[in-house]
Amino acid sequence: MGRSACCAKEGLNRGAWTAHEDKVLSEYIKLHGEGRWRNLPKKAGLKRCGKSCRLRWLNYLRPDIKRGNISPDEEELIIRLHKLLGNRWSLIAGRLPGRTDNEIKNYWNTNLGKKIRDPQQQGSASNLKHHNKNGEPVSKKAKTMEDMPPNMTSPSPSKVSPVVRTKAAKCTKVFINPHPHKPLLSHQHCEENNRGGLMFDRPAGDDHTNNGSSSLSSFSNIADQENSSSDFLVDFDMNEISLASLLNSDFPAINCDNADQNGDNIFSEEMLQHLNDGGHDCVQVQPNLVLNFHSLTSFLDGDQGGEEWLRGS
DNA sequence: AAGTACATCAACCGCGGAGTT
DNA sequence: AAACTCCGCGGTTGATGTACT
Image (cartoon, protein in one colour):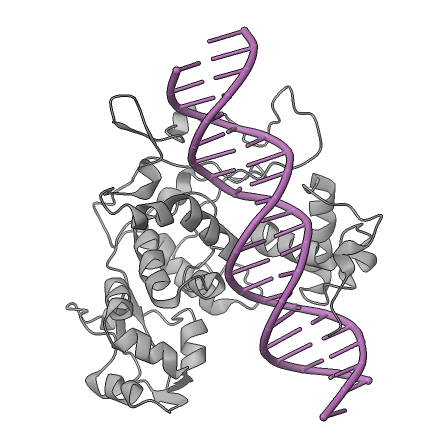
């Protein structure tokens, strides 16, 4: 059936994107929004295929991209979601705000896959890259922020090409917030993307620009504020959702005041029963049902609940 | 210092599904 | 219903960076 041959056209640029191309694409999408990828390059004046533009935007240029280290919580969630979903990277990425399917796929292939295959390796996979001759783990990226160049965008003297190298600065320090309810300048404090901009946490309640991804932003806000803590609570605030919507949602409304401190159950017994009955397209979720991060992973990790739930969708 | 091996990740490729004509 | 277009996904590749010898 009619396959798109856009990438096969001759005369189109391929390979690494230049800063100029990035700028053109970003500005076009800011003005006209995402979508209509096939016609986008022509209208934007880019010599790229639509697919390439889409990929560049989704994986790199999108403003809500979170770059830098995968946190231990994220890592744990990826592992559990992968156990449940397999290589459905886009679904897994949907559960990790700011992360792209490509990034998670790469992270899995380079770190977690090995870790899973070799369960003897304990601890964060990112610390298990290399071993010296004494068998001690040596992180290939074992640079502290002090070691980072002042500006990651500065091309090395030998590289004056306009091609953008899209390496994110990685942070190897862990900040523990002794006051978990105070806003925390967490790991993002030391993240730096290749465009040279430091990413700072937004003040609580600061309604930053979000181009229609409010639920994502809500989740990100909480994640930003309590990122290092594994016990942030996420609160469902909806009356009726479909399974697919739930799976693809980002657990939008946050209400920590109503959090069940035990946080053991994501869903009520009634709801789980409902889910396990199968054949239902929709479930009723009680308002203010409390979800905690570990509960989500526990649920997904369960023998029945998560899998049944997904099968139902 | 140079060469080699390995790790990382952005980008490409091909396919299938959904939507439209 | 068939033909077609567009989009998104997952697998793979290749350029680059880093560690080791």
